[in-house]
Length: 636
Picture 1: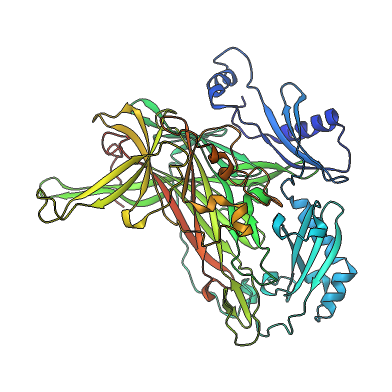
Picture 2: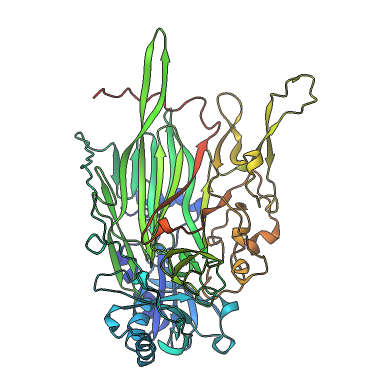
């Protein structure tokens, strides 16, 4: 039986598109930008889930879809709520002056159109490039403030042009610097071709990474095998995942990709809520180079493109090692036809070193090896890859890790031997601009219920003048409750080792103190952007490490529902102007972390994974170490 949080199936996606076509008279000029599950409100979930399981009257769970589509003929966009169980459109909302997310179909159609266009062929021939089969164009979305005034109102894209040295060569090794097509994506026509000749291409660029194309012989590496002869320790029942004391539901949609629902821990016979929903809600990547090739290059990888659409299939032995369970994911094309991504989500167990250990002179050695459950997916965003891992530990910890790899964006240096001001030379006459990856994790924590308060906790040295502490050894922790959204705008403070604790003051633990989970930050950094700059104006979320808001069903996207061609942030920056109370209520934490990427030659031609993470750790949630019940291991 379908659970109310299960992602839309292929048939449900096809059904939703069909209902919109029928009820709203959508024809061939229309495109579907997104079709996703309209998740039920929190308050409705228990009854709907019970009905889906047959434990309560009412039959199968009510299923609804959210559909965003637009007419290429006039550029007008609409959002529909579709009742799948009722077979009807229940709401139809016009979205004036909004541009829906970009689609993979547009990207491919734009590339095909440009590579067949005589103006591009002529410009490339002037640079000595005549084999159009080796050309790649890579279309990007615009921010409104950077769009030429004459094109305002159009669905506009701008493109890079790249060239492969051989059939299997790396196109991102050879940027055709100074050449940028501007495209009307609705009519799929070339509006203009920006063409400033930068001079000769740099010689002797070694930008290849395939084994047959690199000059270095491969090193010898012995095989590493992982086996679980008695099978895995987790169970996967549809989208319900159980492992040791953990239980959660796996979701997926076009925009966030992997979503974790109803994360709970079994503690002494009681299933205790930790989080209602965990996901990534935005990824902002401003390139910090003002040159003509890069000044427009600010990507909203989630809001403009969607992690789900860009999720790739995983391969055993390469992406995942061990005994693996996979889940497929279903997305769709711009015609509303479903597309299945095989092996989109990986679930497996890993050894994680020593969990706890002590050596006693009488009792001897007592040690437990740690094991963790990993739920992961991988995303390819043109030249970059993002590898996302949610790890669950036996002691109640949750770690979220992101690995960034793939290929740097590059362009030609101004002159031989020059040093670019906003980037690093990575090859002969080739530089990679500095840039930043801001990832916004949306953490809807429900710590033993929804009545939660977030506390900022700061460690401080004791006063040197305290007569009770003549040696000034004391260390105190100050916990400050965040009561309003204004107070919920928080920045990481290295000097106090600031963390944030989500506390349920209504539920004491066995020691009489409130239960809680704390967010342990890392990989947090300031935007280093002028607040008046167009990039910052579109993504004010990057101005703080943490934002705390009261839960609202329709507040999902921190930079607004439609950041494509946006001029201002209509998400968190707008919502929090109300200064709503956030004390003892259902709160959502928006944590901003990522990579401040000062590029290196060692990142070229393919980048070793840059690894960042943060933790959610129990802090008074349990009365003592919850991993005391882990049995001893077996000596090898």
